[in-house]
Length: 265
Image 1: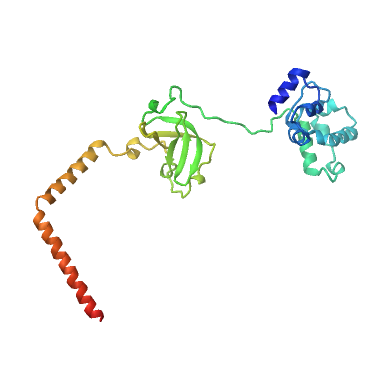
Image 2: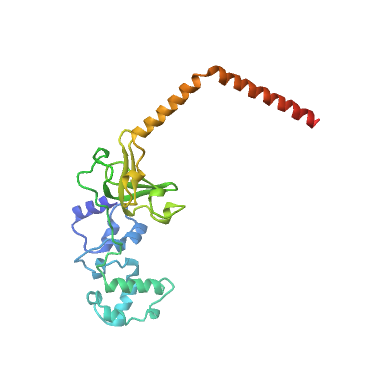
């Protein structure tokens, strides 16, 4: 539909009023009612076409103009005069006080943007892929999704990192949604990077040292494996004793079962 509006403008020339939008292909009455107030026309036939007042409420504005006895062009930005309007005198079955108050506020500031401030995360320069990450980096990112076990954060490397629920804050929380929500901009520290498995572990507790959150060094795993191997060798070195002990335990178990069965009878 937006492409049709542009095409219509290219073929017919610049729009001079909002009613011309009704001639755009696929922009029917319902679409015009919903979108008319958001399509601004500057320097057109009607000064109201440059503000967010919807066309279907123009009759209300015309009544305001009559009561104040001023021109439509002078009505915009005239806060002192618009504040003198008695809202109850303008209410009808179709337009209540809330709608009329919204219209007056828009006429006072016709050029204001109704959208809230939009913030975006500033990704680190030179950090474009997972290979560019180093443990200990502090980056800015945006929360892409929140789950029960943590939150996923987009840090600009085409692979979201995971902030585990335990790494979101210093205090205990049962649900990450108590602290953060999707779309929020946060600062995170890189705790672990696994390019082969495409996994990134992050933490929002920036004061924590990486060593506390990082996995044990490889030598710890090696020592653990060696001790396991030694215990296995020790067990294998006495196979006869182990087998005899196993048979004795089985015999004792059977004897106990027989005694218990007799006692039950």
